[in-house]
Length: 175
Image 1 (tube, rainbow, N blue to C red):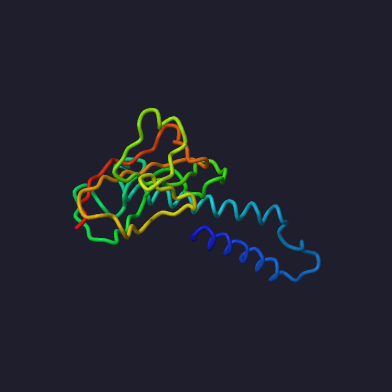
Image 2 (image 1 turned 120 degrees about the vertical axis):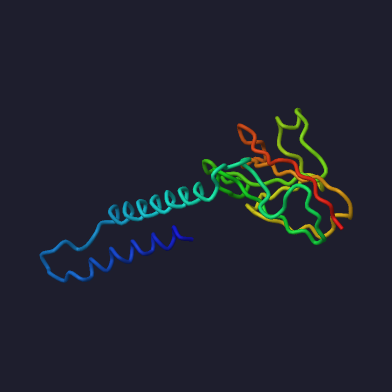
Protein backbone atom coordinates (compact mmCIF):
# COMPACT_ATOMS: atom_id res chain seq x y z
CA UNK A 1 0.00 0.00 0.00
CA UNK A 2 2.79 2.39 0.89
CA UNK A 3 4.33 1.71 -2.53
CA UNK A 4 1.14 2.86 -4.25
CA UNK A 5 0.93 5.99 -2.09
CA UNK A 6 4.56 6.90 -2.79
CA UNK A 7 4.16 6.28 -6.52
CA UNK A 8 0.98 8.39 -6.61
CA UNK A 9 2.71 11.18 -4.67
CA UNK A 10 5.60 11.14 -7.14
CA UNK A 11 3.25 11.45 -10.12
CA UNK A 12 1.29 14.28 -8.47
CA UNK A 13 4.47 16.13 -7.50
CA UNK A 14 5.85 15.94 -11.01
CA UNK A 15 2.51 17.04 -12.48
CA UNK A 16 2.30 19.97 -10.05
CA UNK A 17 5.80 21.12 -10.91
CA UNK A 18 4.97 21.07 -14.60
CA UNK A 19 1.71 22.97 -14.06
CA UNK A 20 3.37 25.66 -11.90
CA UNK A 21 5.65 26.86 -14.70
CA UNK A 22 3.47 28.58 -17.30
CA UNK A 23 6.40 30.26 -19.11
CA UNK A 24 6.13 29.41 -22.83
CA UNK A 25 9.90 28.93 -23.22
CA UNK A 26 10.07 26.32 -20.46
CA UNK A 27 9.79 22.63 -21.30
CA UNK A 28 6.25 21.19 -21.18
CA UNK A 29 7.05 19.01 -18.17
CA UNK A 30 8.62 15.68 -17.47
CA UNK A 31 8.59 13.05 -20.13
CA UNK A 32 6.83 9.75 -19.66
CA UNK A 33 10.23 8.10 -19.20
CA UNK A 34 11.14 10.58 -16.44
CA UNK A 35 7.81 9.99 -14.67
CA UNK A 36 8.23 6.19 -14.92
CA UNK A 37 11.80 6.44 -13.63
CA UNK A 38 10.66 8.59 -10.71
CA UNK A 39 7.89 6.15 -9.83
CA UNK A 40 10.26 3.17 -10.08
CA UNK A 41 12.74 4.91 -7.77
CA UNK A 42 10.02 5.74 -5.22
CA UNK A 43 8.80 2.14 -5.23
CA UNK A 44 12.35 0.77 -4.93
CA UNK A 45 13.09 3.13 -2.03
CA UNK A 46 9.88 2.10 -0.24
CA UNK A 47 10.69 -1.59 -0.73
CA UNK A 48 14.18 -1.05 0.66
CA UNK A 49 12.71 0.72 3.71
CA UNK A 50 10.24 -2.16 4.20
CA UNK A 51 13.07 -4.71 4.01
CA UNK A 52 15.11 -2.79 6.58
CA UNK A 53 12.10 -2.51 8.89
CA UNK A 54 11.28 -6.22 8.56
CA UNK A 55 14.85 -7.21 9.34
CA UNK A 56 15.02 -4.88 12.32
CA UNK A 57 11.82 -6.36 13.77
CA UNK A 58 13.22 -9.89 13.63
CA UNK A 59 16.83 -10.29 14.68
CA UNK A 60 16.73 -13.97 13.76
CA UNK A 61 14.50 -14.66 10.76
CA UNK A 62 13.67 -18.20 11.86
CA UNK A 63 12.09 -20.64 9.42
CA UNK A 64 11.25 -19.22 5.99
CA UNK A 65 7.56 -20.13 6.44
CA UNK A 66 5.84 -19.75 9.79
CA UNK A 67 2.57 -19.49 11.70
CA UNK A 68 1.89 -15.90 12.76
CA UNK A 69 -0.77 -16.37 15.43
CA UNK A 70 -0.36 -19.89 16.82
CA UNK A 71 2.58 -21.77 18.29
CA UNK A 72 3.53 -25.32 19.12
CA UNK A 73 1.57 -26.58 22.14
CA UNK A 74 -1.30 -24.06 21.89
CA UNK A 75 -4.78 -25.10 23.00
CA UNK A 76 -7.48 -23.54 20.81
CA UNK A 77 -11.23 -23.61 20.32
CA UNK A 78 -12.96 -23.66 16.96
CA UNK A 79 -13.33 -22.09 14.58
CA UNK A 80 -9.55 -21.76 14.32
CA UNK A 81 -8.07 -18.79 12.49
CA UNK A 82 -4.56 -19.53 11.18
CA UNK A 83 -2.39 -16.77 9.74
CA UNK A 84 0.56 -17.66 7.49
CA UNK A 85 3.86 -15.82 7.16
CA UNK A 86 6.84 -16.08 4.82
CA UNK A 87 10.31 -14.50 4.86
CA UNK A 88 12.10 -13.41 1.70
CA UNK A 89 9.34 -14.18 -0.82
CA UNK A 90 6.20 -12.52 -2.07
CA UNK A 91 2.79 -14.17 -2.09
CA UNK A 92 1.06 -14.53 -5.45
CA UNK A 93 -1.79 -16.69 -6.77
CA UNK A 94 -1.07 -19.96 -8.58
CA UNK A 95 -0.15 -19.67 -12.25
CA UNK A 96 1.34 -16.18 -11.69
CA UNK A 97 4.90 -16.29 -12.97
CA UNK A 98 6.66 -13.59 -10.95
CA UNK A 99 10.16 -14.11 -9.58
CA UNK A 100 10.48 -14.78 -5.84
CA UNK A 101 6.78 -15.44 -5.30
CA UNK A 102 4.66 -18.44 -4.41
CA UNK A 103 1.70 -19.40 -2.26
CA UNK A 104 0.94 -21.29 0.94
CA UNK A 105 -0.17 -24.88 1.53
CA UNK A 106 -1.33 -26.14 4.93
CA UNK A 107 -0.67 -29.73 5.92
CA UNK A 108 -3.01 -31.07 8.60
CA UNK A 109 -2.09 -34.28 10.45
CA UNK A 110 0.26 -35.34 7.67
CA UNK A 111 3.65 -34.62 6.15
CA UNK A 112 5.20 -34.83 2.73
CA UNK A 113 7.21 -37.98 2.15
CA UNK A 114 10.62 -37.78 0.51
CA UNK A 115 8.97 -38.98 -2.72
CA UNK A 116 6.14 -36.41 -2.50
CA UNK A 117 8.69 -33.62 -2.05
CA UNK A 118 9.61 -34.04 -5.73
CA UNK A 119 6.10 -33.52 -7.10
CA UNK A 120 3.22 -31.08 -6.90
CA UNK A 121 1.73 -30.89 -3.42
CA UNK A 122 -1.46 -33.00 -3.23
CA UNK A 123 -4.79 -31.21 -2.85
CA UNK A 124 -7.14 -32.83 -0.34
CA UNK A 125 -8.48 -32.36 3.19
CA UNK A 126 -5.00 -32.86 4.67
CA UNK A 127 -3.14 -30.79 2.05
CA UNK A 128 -4.94 -27.46 1.74
CA UNK A 129 -3.95 -25.20 -1.17
CA UNK A 130 -4.15 -21.42 -1.00
CA UNK A 131 -3.60 -20.78 -4.70
CA UNK A 132 -5.54 -17.52 -4.55
CA UNK A 133 -2.65 -15.99 -2.63
CA UNK A 134 -4.46 -16.20 0.72
CA UNK A 135 -2.41 -15.58 3.85
CA UNK A 136 -4.88 -17.00 6.37
CA UNK A 137 -7.69 -19.50 6.79
CA UNK A 138 -10.42 -20.18 9.33
CA UNK A 139 -10.94 -23.88 9.99
CA UNK A 140 -14.47 -24.35 11.33
CA UNK A 141 -14.55 -28.12 11.75
CA UNK A 142 -11.21 -29.38 13.04
CA UNK A 143 -12.30 -32.07 15.54
CA UNK A 144 -11.38 -31.95 19.22
CA UNK A 145 -8.01 -33.48 20.06
CA UNK A 146 -4.39 -33.05 19.05
CA UNK A 147 -3.47 -32.09 15.49
CA UNK A 148 -0.23 -31.36 13.67
CA UNK A 149 0.04 -28.41 11.32
CA UNK A 150 2.79 -27.50 8.88
CA UNK A 151 3.06 -24.84 6.19
CA UNK A 152 4.70 -25.48 2.84
CA UNK A 153 5.42 -22.66 0.42
CA UNK A 154 4.93 -23.72 -3.19
CA UNK A 155 5.57 -22.19 -6.58
CA UNK A 156 3.04 -21.26 -9.26
CA UNK A 157 2.52 -24.97 -10.08
CA UNK A 158 2.07 -26.12 -6.43
CA UNK A 159 5.56 -27.62 -6.44
CA UNK A 160 8.13 -27.19 -3.67
CA UNK A 161 10.30 -24.11 -3.86
CA UNK A 162 13.95 -24.83 -4.55
CA UNK A 163 15.25 -25.19 -1.86
CA UNK A 164 12.09 -26.34 -0.05
CA UNK A 165 10.40 -23.84 2.28
CA UNK A 166 8.58 -25.55 5.15
CA UNK A 167 7.54 -24.32 8.56
CA UNK A 168 8.33 -26.13 11.74
CA UNK A 169 5.64 -28.76 12.32
CA UNK A 170 3.55 -27.74 15.32
CA UNK A 171 1.04 -29.61 17.47
CA UNK A 172 -2.11 -27.89 18.71
CA UNK A 173 -4.94 -29.17 20.87
CA UNK A 174 -8.50 -28.35 19.83
CA UNK A 175 -11.06 -28.21 22.65
